[in-house]
Image (cartoon, one colour):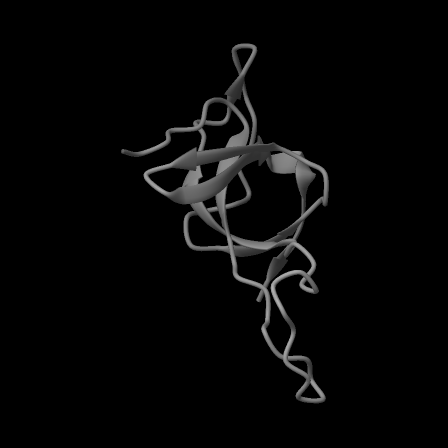
Length: 93
């Protein structure tokens, strides 16, 4: 099953949090903070209220998004986040 976002929305798939810190300490599941990094898996049409909005993101982009933005969706045992393009803070190059 696929998700097709509407308008200026994008679908993100979370990137798993690191299990080890830079100093080598292994983190348990409870100690990990939810990641704010994700990969774009689908991009909307860019049409909002009959006007075209420039979609700056494309499928495959690695992004940072606002912590409490979007709607979390679970399909086929995979978790996705659907949010407006404006809730993406930046693209990781």
